[in-house]
Image 1 (tube, rainbow, N blue to C red):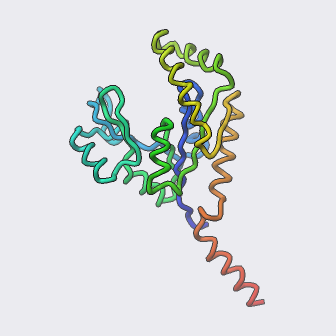
Image 2: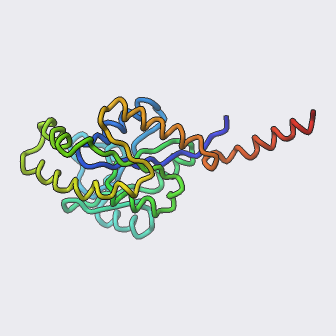
Image 3: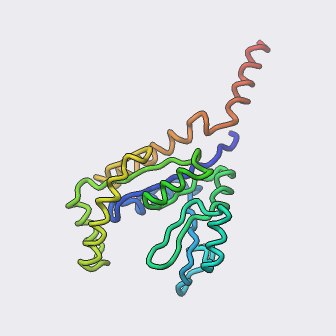
Amino acid sequence: MPKRRGLLVILSSPSGAGKSTLARRLMDWDAGMSFSVSATTRAARPGEVDGREYFFRTPEEFARMVAAGEMLEHAEVFGNRYGTPRGPVEARLADGQDVILDIDWQGGQQVRRSVLAHDVVSVFILPPSIADLESRLRGRAQDSDAVIAGRMAKSRDEISHWGEYDYVLINRELDRAAEELRTILVAERARADRQPWLSDFVRGLNEEFEAR
């Protein structure tokens, strides 16, 4: 079968709602899917490799990329800049590979306004309740009470942007949410406008009719 163009899958959620776990489930389901690699101005940590964990760039290089339109989205976090380089994503999509962006609503807005907007499938992940969200954050045993309180305060604003997304999933149970996410991807891949080869295929069918 001829190759289709890839999908740019945006996954967003408040911290603790499960988007990173669901993204990994997608890649377990289809090994052809991959995370985009972000660029950052922060220094590489021990063991990190340029182009694997991040594209490590100087502040000047990062600013040049933004000015040249080479970033799909970008933001400053705790004094460092982070963003999604356009080139590698565009190359994978053209090669028929689906790319996952694990980004917040602000990054999602930027990507949906970018030159790759037509390739986007955006999914927002909601927790079943706020109590459950806090329980998941505490269950990680990674953050202090102050950090958890900060994440919870930020969650309310993040959740308010659910209506900007193509699809919304409530992650009540991980296996079910993963299945729903896979269903979305199967349906989006089958859309007629994502399969440009269909016109030639149907033309061939009509030629078969005429040859009968």
